[in-house]
Image (tube, rainbow, N blue to C red; front, side, top):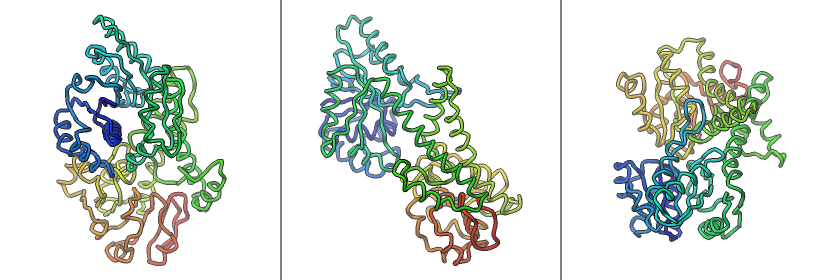
Length: 453
């Protein structure tokens, strides 16, 4: 098929590259000329495992191309995917200005019937608005062609997006037109050879499914974090509780790991947008508000624990941070718990030595003044940032941090205090090595016993 993907951001790039990998002719359109030029040379503006070699291979084969000109991208396209950003507006709702601007331009430039697909995460009713704008533009130009607009929400996890796209556990297609459904069924058929998990439904149901899925996962995280807070007061280890409830198949083990809060581009944004949608319909979204509030609180716990440990005196203390990205496998810092902790530490006068496998360049741009002033040091080495540290904080559970040489870390630190923001370490083992260990919702172990975070 001939496919046009509008938007060369995270979702657009993965979508365009993976469709090209399956033999489709794909043109990806973006207004950012510098980004287009870099992509045409095989340079990725994001970090996503496995994407770069696939993109370069498809560029070389001629199956994938990039352009700033929409008319070139949509020429003879069978399917046009809209994958532009939907950032959070000031009131928390999804900002649809980019999506609707694309719809207006399609109405001005399309000259043939095709299927337009919303790949962006958009509120219920957006496909109808997009269809009205496109077909209205076509009618004003005297074009007889008409387009159908479908919803095909993405379910890509940063860090494993290529695998998620190539081997999806389900593909949701919201389309009220049988021809459109069949076209998308053919397009996704190569990705679903081992199991047919193409779920067809109404457009509005598909649009809502994306928000509901992310809100539910965010709720699971916030629930276990709230349980961790109670466990900390009762002297109960949340890890034992997690195993106890996770063995119930109705609950499962996914997304019930206590930690220092969720971040990224999806969960925070989508929960906010769903809250605003409910308010607009006159519904009080009590559960969603609680999820949002719990997560905001969770991001402050590591700083609170550090401040408590040092009796409120963080001025001049050296704190080492392992992990900055909101999750392993990405350089994305959007809504990352590390930023909340870092801002608080810098404001309190602490000196921070931070390490992340891929996110340090992004962080360096954000904290250029602190880097220049020497209050912040960035490194690729977890051992280098441990040198002279009064405390070590695990924020993001990259594989590089799972089994380090803790004897070496212990020898490098000024004070062997470890705050485990993801509960990945064996507290007893660390205590034997001379550390004071503190986790999330776990009893403190080693050193002078203190309350858990």
